[in-house]
Length: 250
Image (tube, rainbow, N blue to C red; front, top):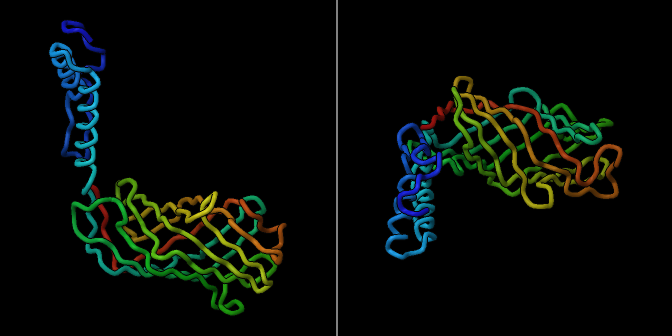
C-alpha cells in the first residue's frame, strides 16, 4: 500500500477479546502504518507482515494461556451414574457395564492452562452380577474391558454457564470375551483415541458426549455380524466425581 492510500474497510475494526480482560485493538491499523513506514524506508513489506503475525501469536498465546480455575483440585474419584454402554454403530452390537470407577489427579488453583488439567490414573469397567464380574456383550457373552495407555489426560475445551466441555486423550481399550474374541479400540488409523465430555459444577457430573474411537483389531474368534475393524463406536454414560470440583474460566 502506498502512503496516502485508504486502508481496507477492515482497518481499525479487528478486535479480539480473550478472557474478558485482554483486548487486542487496532492491530491491523498498526501493521498497515508500520508497512507504510517501512516502504518509505525502502524495506520489504514482508517484514511488517511478519512482525504483525508474530505480535498476533504472542498476544494470543499470552491471553488464552492460564485462564482456568479448578478448585479444590487434588485427588479425585469418579463413579458411574447409570450404566456405561459402548455401541458398534455399524452393527448395533452393544456392550453394557453396570459399574465403572476411576481415580484421577486434578490440577488446582487459578491461572491454569487448559491442557492436561486432569490425569486419569486408573479406570475400570465391570458388571458384578455377570460371569467373572465382566461386562455383558450380545449373546450373553461376558466381556472384559481393560483401559490401556494410562494415564489418560483431560483438557478443557470451552467454558459454559455452569462448568465446561473437555476432551480425554490417550484412550486405548483392550477387550476379551469369554468366547475367545479379542479386540482393541483406539483412534482411526491407529494410536490412542479421544472421548469428549462435559462437566456440570452444580451436579458434579461428567457426561460422555462423543468419541472418535473405532475398532482397531479383532481376531478370528469374533462374530463379524457384531464387530469389525474400522467400525465406529458410540459411548454413553456419566460419572459423579468426589470431592466436588468447581471449574470456571476466566
